[in-house]
Image 1 (cartoon, rainbow, N blue to C red):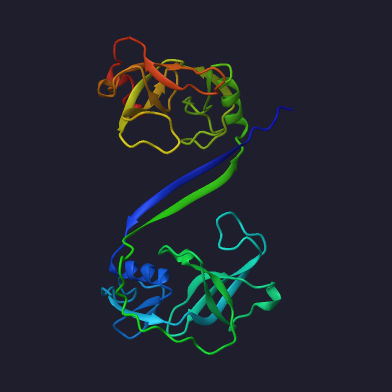
Image 2 (image 1 turned 180 degrees about the vertical axis):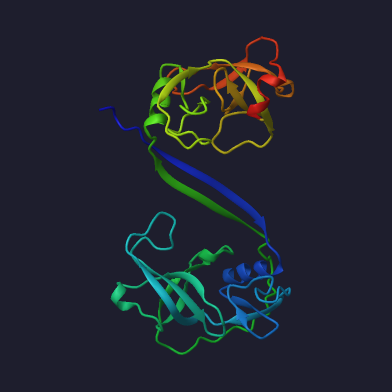
Length: 313
């Protein structure tokens, strides 16, 4: 039985966004150990604040300070914290309605065990030692049995306000290809490109998925395609990606390999970026020890006629 292929993969996108006056005041307030909500036209106080009333869609800007103490409205125990979560020991995810607020804030509660957490328990904010103007300025909540804490009287006006944030979105997962893709990957180690033909419509799909996306039937007949192909569409990349050692600008293209009925995507090299065009005939360039082509380069052949690839756009 062949070895099962698997690989750890990471999808990461640090999203940079600017802040409006409401979110700016809220995050700057956290930096200063102040929690701000926003008052709606019917008198409710929303924490965390939003810029528009979720009921009436009215624009909101009446900032209101609430207390750093509150009541747990619901909770769930997290017995195995993951990377990047607020605490590295087991904790409870809690919704906390802070004193003075009408909505609840989601965060972590540092508690010794699930038997110590309950709906209705009183908690307070534990502030982070180093605060930068982010939700992580609240390190977590902790049990508290005192009266509502006093507020500072802040109006939401601060020096050096936070005007933007970077939200790091990341997904770590282990990918295991099925039978069809494993055969495709094994063929690439021999510098061959193999797809599968649908027994119904006779189209050849590369890379194969084990089933025809058009007919919905399983595929099993292997077909070697390429290695040459035709550029069907392309884009010019002008922003350098993190951890990618390729100088910009460069071209990323959809390439219809000879004999395939589905275009795959790859980088185009060996030609100035502004000379890449639809119909350009290309061939793979392999790097020793690498499973897949590093890029595709022009073959020197005449461009393909549009009618030969128009169905693959």
